[in-house]
Structures are given as structure tokens and as C-alpha cells.
Amino acid sequence: MQASRFKQTFRALMPVLCLAAGCGPVEAEPPAPPPAHQEEAIEDLNGLSFNGLSFNGLSFNGLSFNGLSFSGLSSSAFNTWFQTNPAMANLVMRYVVRCAVPAGQTRTYTEPSTGQQYTWPGSLGLAPGWASGQLPTLEEQQVVSACLGAHANRLAEEVSISVLGRDAAATPISFTADELASHSRRESCFFGNLFSGQGIFVGSDREPLGPGESTSRACGPLLNGGSESSTPCAPLTYVGACTTYCTLDASGLYFTSCTYNGTTYHRPLTTRLRVQDVHVCGDTVCQATERCGTSNRYDNCGLDCRSCP
Image (cartoon, rainbow, N blue to C red):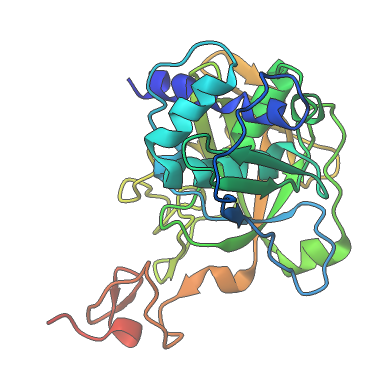
């Protein structure tokens, strides 16, 4: 089942945040020759303070990556999980650390069998206790889950997003007027708990996209007047309008809790996009979200993608 795969994956992910804090077993020394090193860089945002700004690009496969069968928090379990598919595991960890660990810190993992070293930088710092090596609280589980959902992109594209909400300690994620201005298009709310197998849910925080509009993040903004049926969102579960399930903060910028199927999630996150990241049929560029045709609809866009053969 999908929920089982979620739970298995995150049991495997938990040990890596202990590696730098010294709460796990000592790793074996890497074999000679000196290992190669792979470091994930945080992209520059043209002088804007990072605050809640981030880049999404986690493939949906990363949310449902099968961690096989793991128990406990030992580094050997993490090693086994990581080596099953290093490329996918590296991608997943890039976003786990970005969400959980504060900016200016990194987490490093060395594959014992090859000596390959991976370093992932923190950014949002939403789970300070977990990042310091403690077991994750319920709030940390929820906020990291919401953060991973917010960073999922059905085309695995790197798109700049603004992430608003509160961290696990209920401290609001800082933002600037420049951030709100540059990312002026409201997008989605994300909530859930991947650790418990409850899944991750996404709602729309804006009006539907127009018939000529499209985005690689279409699981939040509705397509074509409100129909999401043509948009593959799994393993994200689309629930409709955020306001149906979530309570808005007094600032009006993000939601403080969401209740779905009888469960209340106290650490939802809200996202905003740049206007230019919502593609419009007629801008002369055939985007990956557009299709050839004879009309001005995103899925029949002759203006950008020409007529179909």
C-alpha cells in the first residue's frame, strides 16, 4: 500500500539527521582512495533574503520512494535504504535536510561501500529538535511532511516558491515584503503526516487557472475552471479549496491548522508562486505543460506549440 511505503521510507530517513549530531553508531572509515564528494548547492535568489523562499523540484517518485523494510534508527538501516537507489535517495535527502535543518548547517553522509560523500545544506529549519538529533515530535513530523509535499513538482522542475506558515515550535517562518511582491500569486496549502502513513494532502489557495494557463505545480491550483481530474497528483491527495478544511492566520497569509477525515494537522504550510512561473498559451514558448493544437488552451496551444503532426 502507498501509506506503507511512505512509512517505510521515512523510518529510513530519520537516522541521517543524527549523523552530524553524534546520536548514531560511528560510521566505518571510507576506503582509499579518498572519496569523491557531492554537494547540493542552494541557488541564489538575486539578492533576496532566503527567509521562506526555496526551490521545489522533488519528483513525485521521491515522495513514494519504496524504502523497503526498515526498523529502528541505526545508520546501517539508512545505508541499506540509501544504497538501494542512491540517485533517488540523494534527491529525497536534499529536500529532507532543506526542510528540517537551519540555513548555514549541512548534513553529510558517506556511503561505506564506495566512500562517496554527500552533503546536503539546510535552509528552512522547520524541525530544530529533529535536526539536532532528537526523535521527531508530532509537529516536526507534520511540518516536514508538509514541506516535502510543497517541494514536489510533477515535472521535477526547479521552480521558486515562497513557503509560509509556522515551524514545529510554532514560530512563524520569516518573510519580507519583497518576497510577497515577487511571489504574488497564491498557490496551495499542504498538510499531512508521511511518518505515520497518513499521507500528504494539497488544497487550492487561489482561483482556478484559466483555460490557457498551466504550471508544473498544477496539483494545487485547479485547471480549467475547477477540474483537477486530468492532473496526476498521486501520491499527493487533492482535497479542494484550502478554506474548506483549514483555519486562516490573522495575517491572512497562511493557515494555522487543517482538519481532514477527522484528523487535525497543526503545521500546514502555504505556498506562493511568481507570476512568470504560471505559463500562458500565447507567450510564444511551448512549455512542458503545454500541448500542440489549433487553439489557445494550454492542452491545445497552437499559438506556442504549433499544430499537431
